[in-house]
Length: 115
Picture 1 (cartoon, rainbow, N blue to C red):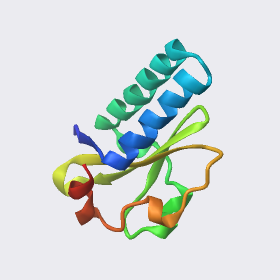
Picture 2: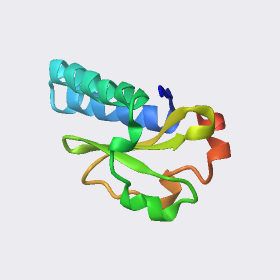
Picture 3: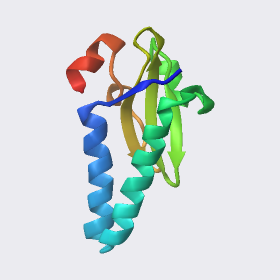
Picture 4: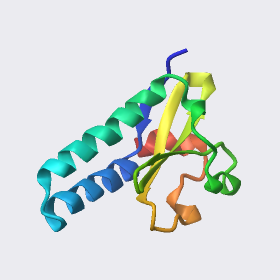
């Protein structure tokens, strides 16, 4: 079974923000481009067998399932919606940052509004 992949705007912003930090603050645009390609390769890989990634600790905060993809020191959070055969990337952060409950969507119905 192949899943469609969607990334909500807040998660896109956080990924872009990290890439800009690597490119500008660390002065390494080539590394930022490689890092960004790696992140999107992992996200694209969710189309096949997304449950291979572990549940996130943040799963306890939500009424829906939350899983995580570690990418070096960066973490991408996602949920799987079997009814629509879709995977939604719902949050992304550097591993040193704390996740707050309000960083994650309240419910699955709100996902389409944040895409």
